[in-house]
Image 1: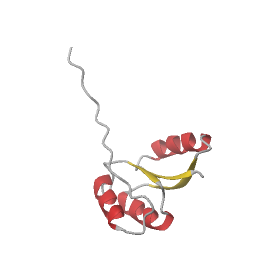
Image 2: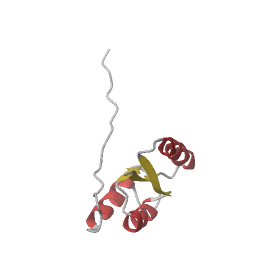
Image 3: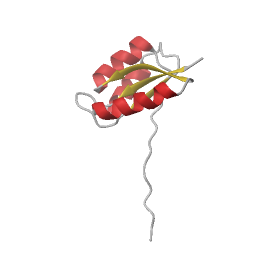
Length: 92
């Protein structure tokens, strides 16, 4: 069974690249794409993806608030959890 992934990013090129990578993996299926946080909340409720790859800084509704609203919706199979990937600086 493929994991269903929703991509959320206001940069269309980034969405396209992530979707390209997803389509190459037989264990992943594209559940949809959204270009802002409000659209993301709506798609999460409709599509109920297993995984959401979400940009943090977006117009209309940022990724953190979109995640909070999506998690508040109880019908999700797997609630998305915010994951923060912060680059560490090396001290020279």
